[in-house]
Image 1 (tube, rainbow, N blue to C red):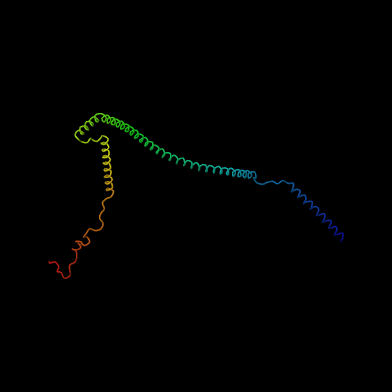
Image 2 (image 1 turned 135 degrees about the vertical axis):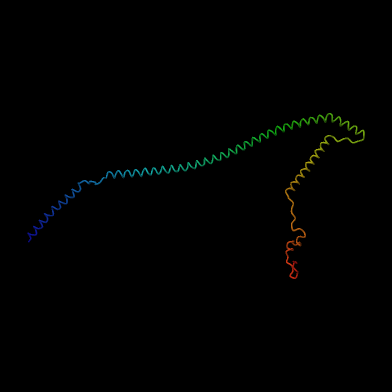
Length: 227
């Protein structure tokens, strides 16, 4: 019995040893054999690389597009501002031309006024010189003769030329003041139209309408019109 069990254990050990050696050989074969990829893996790698590059360029394109849109919006605002400035400039140019024309007309009127003033001043100087010549010459001689003769006749002397001119000036001013008062009164009368009297005319309250009196019904006992 003991020999039989020993033989069995020896056989089992001998059987187990080849299996162990077989597993070790399989593991060593698995470690040393290279992995072979299946399918078109190079095409997939190229596709992935192109996809990544596409995303990169797409982001760059979006960034440039945003910059262009921002610049375009700013450009539109600037163009609108330029258009507004052109319109304002046209208005200012029109106003400038109008003012220049008005200034030209004012200058022309001023030149005419200067010429007229110079002409009137010359006429006044001529008249003053003429008055002085007459006053100092013929008028003085005639005035002296008249005063002498009036004195001999017992009459008062005539007023001097200065007094006569002052009286004429005062009379002229009074006439101007009267004319101004009349004009002001006329303007006030035109501005205030005549007012109509308020209320009914006298006696209208007791007066009956003629149509109402004719259409009143006759009394019940009165005879009707004859047929």
